[in-house]
Length: 114
Length: 509
Image 1: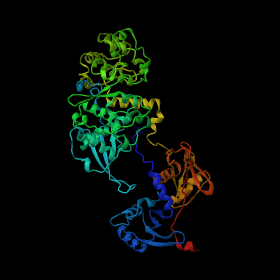
Image 2 (image 1 turned 180 degrees about the horizontal axis):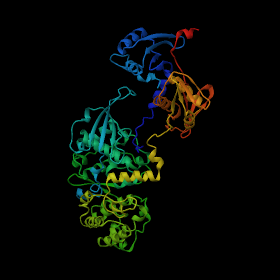
Image 3 (image 1 turned 180 degrees about the vertical axis):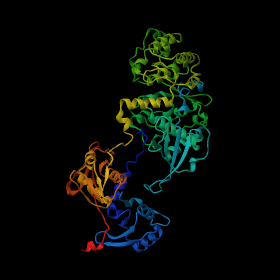
Image 4 (image 1 turned 30 degrees about the horizontal axis):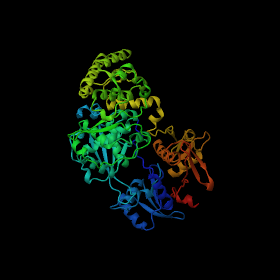
């Protein structure tokens, strides 16, 4: 039981998101996970902004998360960073982090998978 | 009229109304309009209420405040959405109105509390406890309305009046004199729908402000068509009859007025039709009040002690104008609500504590309007997905049909989403079960389904899960809500990049 009256619900919160969606529909960064054999997984980061040098990012990430990874050139999606293991959370934090990350808006990042 | 004779202030057990715990979330100022705001949260408990801890100095805190509270009557485990917002103007105004009370966290709590209390009480009980809505009325411009009805009922209560009430209730840190000579309390516009503008402010010579119930308001309860001319009260003349006593005369005949206001309170709490039977004689003469009371009481089952206390209370109200009401309310309040015994007795004169009223409100709500009571929690439930392992590398999602039916979605759409999210593929077997490649646990499937529901099932406008997903024009999917009627396009399911897994030699071939 809770009290409906007191719920503060910003009616424009989602409207805000909406405008963001229409503007940046293409600019979403998708972080996905894929299962490999056994307990192994792959993490793919797709749609990083062009202004970043993917190679350098990958280098930092590999060092930081202690995993291997490559850059895959996909015909549709462009350059995709592919990492070994489930690095979704780490990557997300890295992309958002203001100090030693990329300072991206968390709204533009979508984490998929289970 | 001395402050302890106010009809409302004393009888409201204010302390009992305080939520046990209030969390103040102080919003950082959004410098550029719509930026994401962050919360700093401070938790104050009930004990911090009276002792003015100066830990939180509101002056240099962020201007917007979100209050999350816990209160005994509710499920107190949750500190979440039950929040009210005060904007900087609201707090600033409060600070203007009573410097002492807002600068300290406890002062703010008081305000917040008044607000919360108002939100919890149905308008009727509010009327009885005129003390709380006043502050709320003041804060109102800044605060989202709790509910249209309550808010509109509160609209016209005078801010000063309620502050006065608080003072009368003996709250610390709320100085009466400071309040009395504040002419700059903003006047709120009258609202049409308000029925009770029931307070008249009486300013004492020493600067104390007290409120009286002016009984000129049109009665919306049975009082208006009650026989206001029974022989006795008619003989006693107009000024003892509560429905005719003008507000200015109030100090002149305190006992009568006191009783009437008590009566009113009771009426809100009890069944209104019956309350006025005894009223006129009771108000009219002290001697008559008691016999009437006794007669009434015989009808109801009761415990002796309560009756005695009530009698004493009634006597003392008549004699001293309610000086001892405070004592009476300290006594234990018990009784069966459904049978109307104890404190819930029909002609009980004690004030019912906030906790009791609150619990009564919710029990009544859940009895009479289960819809309202349950709507608070979004309890959209689907049966848990059943996951079986087929061999070593495949998972069978057995009850997908059932779940799809429950969500009112086609299984194709759900399957498509599942596969794209899980980054795998699969097939549907003979008995309509889904075979997914890869090993997945029930928890993982559950998470994905939860995301699906958020994105494709619940209405974004009203959050109701009663929706339909249709293919509209332009091959777009549209989500139509059946409860609020909103229509909105949803994103198409995209698989995105999928890395090549497995042996490369196979792929090349």
